[in-house]
Image (tube, rainbow, N blue to C red; front, top):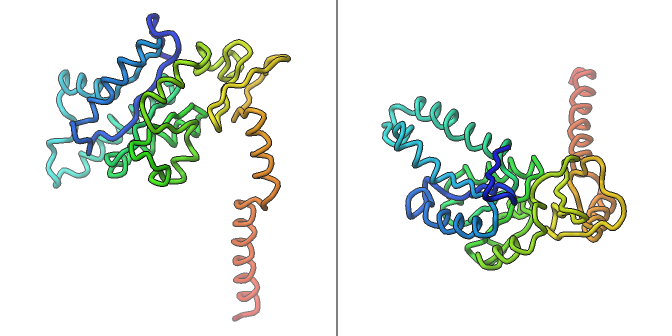
Length: 245
């Protein structure tokens, strides 16, 4: 895990549209967000800044390839963008901030990055540029830890977090002292008794535990239903074939 001695509260990856961003790579909001995060003690991972630094040192990897060089473009993007950006999230990221706007809708990278963070139980904080929650797809909503409508609302939330709670403790949980971060609602809950001494993933606060319990127990498991349904169709075909029909 990459660690910066000046910004000890954790690394935050800045995810958002690049290819279709109006200012080119989405650099403006990332630059401003980086300043605010550093003031609070977080280390921003600004992918636009990193991409520009790479281009200055080694040239652009795909933008100037013609359409008849599609395979080379695909190969470049797989190696130098998908693999690299996902590796940065997997290995060096404590939390993700995503600016959800039209450039994200037109692109694909941000959606993949958020999904990767979700699968790794990395907190995702989403800034909804539309204000209306209906504009954010349900899957994207479900993969977030907390959703905000303004930057100041997000900064206020991050500022009041117990120091270091975005980073995993020795057991793999996001803890600061007696405080733990709920992965479903982003609430910080104080645990008064013993610490969790093994990884709890996903980690829920008390109210979310009850909510998830209801979710699991009130409805038949959807995946199990799918399997039973598909197995039923297979059996029907097997029976028909056995009858020679």
